[in-house]
Image 1 (cartoon, helix red, strand yellow):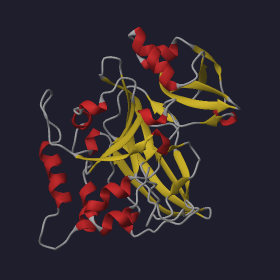
Image 2 (image 1 turned 180 degrees about the vertical axis):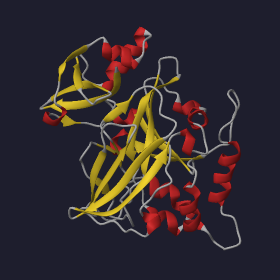
Image 3 (image 1 turned 120 degrees about the horizontal axis):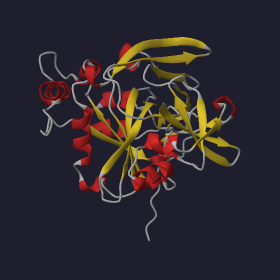
Image 4 (image 1 turned 30 degrees about the vertical axis):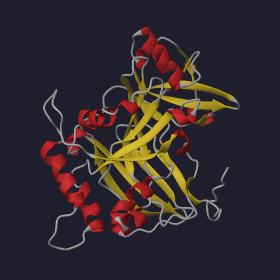
Length: 324
């Protein structure tokens, strides 16, 4: 039974492989990208797993090819990367500490988190509490497995955020179709965010990384993982994290509704990578990352981890605008 898909490259040639529950991989004959395979499945009125199953070929050694991000669009401008925060039980604690103005006042972060606790899992067919939403960028911000997560030269921090992302394509009728789920590192600037809550939008305009695996079907209710930072070959920080609806204050359906309720996000052919949030950050434990640190995120619902080193871009000076 097919559990997930990966994209890979052999020299200049791309392909797709299907993984079973044991992690054994077989080539999907004729498929060069996951998106192309998804388009075929939608046109045929079948599932992505069934489309892959119908084209299984020989076994493939994933260690002998270059693994790619699990989803991409031929035009990165047609991919929207976004996310929701304060969605996990316990996720407000670190944010509340960051933004608390007075010991006896309740921050907007805590208020929003409690809205989710009280109304984030509505009955089927009902609309629940609206979550925090943020924009990260287009498909150009997604880095491949093993590639550096590069913070801008002006960044105050480059910090990991171990999360699960939903992967979607908008069909020809303007309806969102979930292709599956990916394990990821959403990556943010927590020092900038801490400076002023209104800088949250700035802090999210950073790269992000996905593990190479697109998990098909439903996400388990209870996902258990580990997030760590490795420095000079030694584990600097490590902590378990949880995800899945059993550990969230919002249902996935509610988060999906509040993203796709906007007509602007329903353009046929577009891809969406939407991060669902986390409650576990090294920054909350006082860790300051350094260039060369390696972020590692793994979880029991996924066969492959996401692993990326931290880098900093070269300063380019003041942005210049030319008048016509």
